[in-house]
Length: 246
Image (cartoon, rainbow, N blue to C red; front, side, top):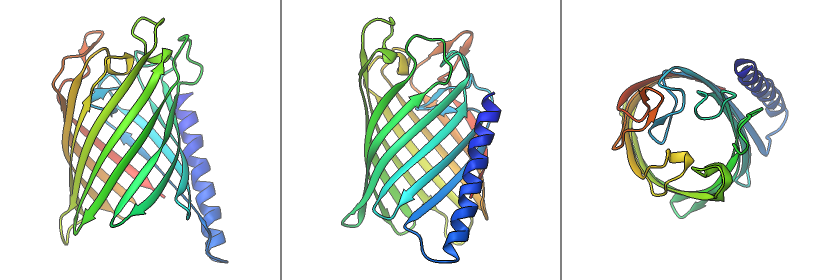
């Protein structure tokens, strides 16, 4: 079911994109449709494996307006210790605008786990980020906050919140199709989202791009040992990915 769901989402995005291109031949549109699909060796969310250190299939579609408003849906296969239906769907609504030479991005993400039998699975976060590009180097700082919700509770009764701060750097290597990136993040609250831990995560990686294909590899690690069954899902690991965009 999870593969069918993601494949249908990617197919719908492809059809919508084809329609958008057809419209572009007639007149410029205020709306842009984009999307993609990725196969990844381990789905890591803030350093913690969501797929039990196994491969995952992912897909996304985004609808953007020239005003800066956008909506998107993103999906991934996950393991049943995250949600017992093994599928995650993220619905995002946001707004981007230029602030001087920088870009401000703010919005809300709703995390949905279809057909989950857990009493409380879905939750939402609000986010804001500021990014700036200088030559081949791009930087971004972001704040993500999930208000108190029962889905984030460790005991299934009370309500917990979650605060995550992060910074990213990326740079293209001149005259090559290769870019490098680095990430540093900190989870400040103990909740179901963080397996009850306050911890720091980081990663470094590189991406090779050819036309609309992207081959990536990264090293991901945290400063905590978080167990899901017999596996340490926060342990350092190499993550590889192959994605296509349209």
